[in-house]
Image 1 (tube, one colour):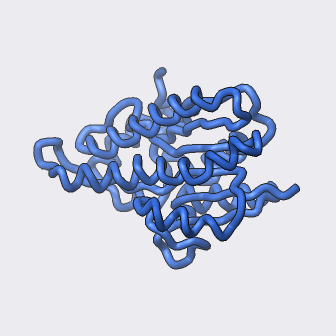
Image 2 (image 1 turned 90 degrees about the vertical axis):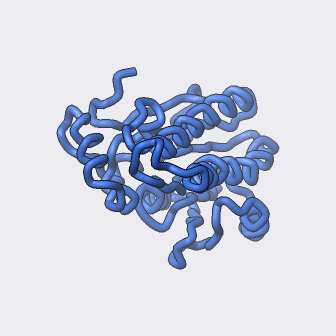
Amino acid sequence: MTRTALVTGGASGLGAASAARLRSNGLHVYTLDLAPSADIVVDVRDEAAMNVALEGIGPIDVLVNSAGIVGPGRPLIETTNEQWREVFEVNVLGTLNAMRAVLPQMCERGWGRVVNIASMAGKDGNPNLSPYSASKAAVIALTKSVGKELATSGVLVNVIAPAVIATPINAATDPAALAHITSLIPMRRIGRPEEVAELVAWLCSDLVSFSTGAVYDISGGRATY
């Protein structure tokens, strides 16, 4: 049986790398993004549109939530509520919308894999990136909660916390903030998308059977807890 995967934010960066890696494992992969090159062009913030779009592709066995934005790179007191809402709507509600769309059928079939992409910023907090850091902390807590809720369902829900990875989203990050968070990596380099994609592929497979609600760091040694 060929399993079907949905990768949000799948047109570029970690999403594109994850989609390619899952295809190499034989999965039928749909990418969902705002970019025209995606298989499904939908805004993850639009729950109704996402549900309609997914109705036509059948059951989803694997969900990778990679859609996200960085938001403003400035001190907290210079940020606005509108900026905070935008970051949380994409990074948190977008993740939530995708999960609610696919989890019922996964639970009904008794098998599923959900991998959410958070960030080391969600564990450590990066200066001048408070909306992003807070949103990724929310994704981590969301994953832990849902992983516990579904622990006996056959559906495993885990989250990955990468350090800086060479992706378009980080290419647009404030250079000073990027330099600071890169300096925290003991390996003294940034990560590659394909390195994260290997971890994604493993978490989406049958090889993982006793891990849910867990946080997997891929940080070049930055993680300290």
